[in-house]
Image (cartoon, rainbow, N blue to C red; front, side, top):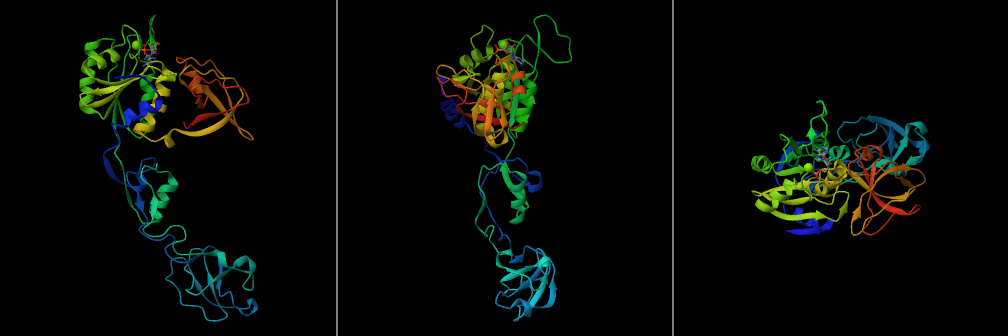
Length: 383
Ligand code: AMP
Ligand code: MG
């Protein structure tokens, strides 16, 4: 087992166990935010024929404007018309096929003798030509991507199947919200955030019964989830405490591959295999589990486009870095002449309010503080 790995090394190890492997075909209308599992070629030219981008007349550029005579009308959906004879003009609607020899269009607003414009003809294949790559593998399918697929002839598309992810929370102090809070207890919240993060990632979450801090019940849950899921995520029980049984169990009875990542918050994640199923132990502190999900799970299980944009922002508040660790402070982005980043609340990793009050994470390299006025790298989160 490797210890204290860099984020890049942790990702390298995770990518040895790809979660996105199965593929399926889906109708494009249901493919929003799915991830393409192969390059997709254009089945036809776009546009498929020369056509008009305006309402007006199709003409020959060489004809003197005052000689033009309207000889017919072409509507969108009509078959391609005949060639124009000298001085002839066809009235034409947007999207209608242009006559094969027409080389100019006159806008209806300008009148039949108006100025002729060559660039208003949309030429066959000028957007994308048949047989070329319309979208590349691993692209997240946005609404414009889906429209592009349709426009080049696809009714279905091949995407990665949604992985099944089990979520196990651990901790004797945890009770479900809605129940009365007894002394020493806190409301369990990580299963709630992880469920929505897993869904946002395009995977299928299953929250299993929360585990007591007890190695036998945890073993039982690991066995059960290894059977039924592509990935097990646990929360809590991975650091140095006497009741940190996720770590203990994985190290003693599973196949641990790394423990502890050089990042803050979220230092103690543990990763390994349990009966051949990948299991990632996230820290219990709510901000830590969130940040580890964004940095380690998202690129592995999903696609960053579904979660954040990488930006550069100018700091308005000082940020404390950490020795040897990449630091993800919570910051609020303001869009002005440039992007400005401020830190507004207490940054403790137990304070989920800090994720609510801010909307981005700094990416401070190891051993680096962020000074006011400096440009820093950040991840601007998509809700
Ligand atoms: P642990 O990693 O188990 O030592 O937990 C670290 C901190 O996170 C402790 O203060 C826990 O009470 C808290 N914590 C652990 N799991 C959860 C959870 N599912 N929801 C909210 N807080 C949690
Ligand atoms: Mg615990």
